[in-house]
Image: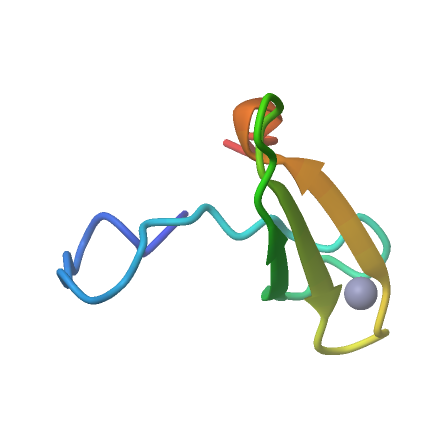
Length: 64
Ligand SMILES: [Zn+2]
């Protein structure tokens, strides 16, 4: 269950952090590449197994 909506902080951009597809660990947002005519490319890194996971902002994976 995501804990992002539970505590809204103005200084933080609400970004859904996906779970690692390999080890189900919490992934950390390491980089955002802004796109001009395309959605931002967000790079996540798993804190456990260091897997790199890239996702377009418009194309976010929702894991319920
Ligand atoms: Zn992992």
